[in-house]
Image (tube, rainbow, N blue to C red; front, side, top):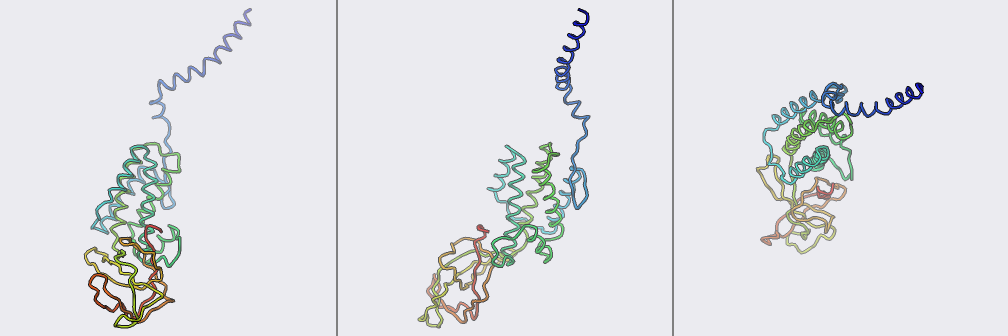
Amino acid sequence: MFRLIIDFITALSKLLWPILAFVIFFTLKKQIIKLLPRVKRVKIAGQEIELDEAIDKFQESVKKSTDEIPEQPTSDEKEEQAVIRSVAQDPQMGMVILAREIEKEIRNLYATMGMLNERNYVGLRQALEVMIQKSYIPKHTAASLEIFQNLRNAIVHGKEVKDEKEVIRVLDIGMTLLQTLRAIPHETNIVYHAEIDLFSDVKCTIPVNDAKGLILLTISPGGVEENYRIYPTTKIGYYKKGKQVSWEWDLKKVWLETWYKDPKTKEIKQAWNSSGNFIGRHVEEL
C-alpha cells in the first residue's frame, strides 16, 4: 500500500511539473525574456556588428549621401503611401517594397545613362559596380546601398530581428536613400512625338521607308534645360507619348542627311546630318 502511494505521488509530480513550468513562464515571461541573450548581429563589410550599430552606420552613411547630392527631388507620394500602408500591416513587407523601389531606381539609372546596350537584364550588383566605377554613384551613396542590402537581408531572411521599431527605423532611413538615388544628376528622355515621316531630300518629296522620326523631350541633369531632339528609329509603332525611355542605339544602321515636317507648324526642317538608329525602350518595361 505504501509503495502504491509513493508511485502515485511520483506519477502526479511528473504530470504537474510541465503545467507548473508553463505557469511560471507566463507569470514571469517579461523578466525571463530580458534575461535571455539577444543575438542581433548583422554582417557589414565582412564584419559582424550589433544591429543597433549597423542602423546607426546606415543613418550616418545616408546623411553623407544627401550631403553629396544636396538637392533632393519631391517624393513619389504613391510609393511612399505603399510603404506606409505595408508598414502598418507588416514592417517586413514594407522592407521588401522599399528594396524593390531602390533596385528599380538603380536599374533605371543604369538604363537612362546609356549602359544597358540592348541587354534585357543586368544583375543589380553588376549595374552598381559599373556605375560606381564610372563615378555615376557617389561613394557614400554606394556605401549606404551596401549597408541597406545587408540590413534588408537580415530583416527579411533572418530570424534575429524581432523589434519592429528597428525595422521602421531602417525604413525611414531607406526612404531618404531612395530620394537620394533619384537626385543623382542624369539626363532624362521622354517621348514627345513618334511616327514622324522622314525624307531624304530638302523638299520632302522622297520618303525614307525604313525608319520613322522620334522626337524626344530631353531634360538636362539639373532639370533646368529642356530640348527637343529628333532621331530615326526602326521601332515603328512602339513608342508612346509621355513615356521615359532608355538611352540605347544601334550604330550598325545609319542615315545621312534627312528632313521632316514639324508636326505642329508643318515647317520643313533638317533632322540631322548623320544619325544611328535609336532603339531605347520604355523605362517601365526594364
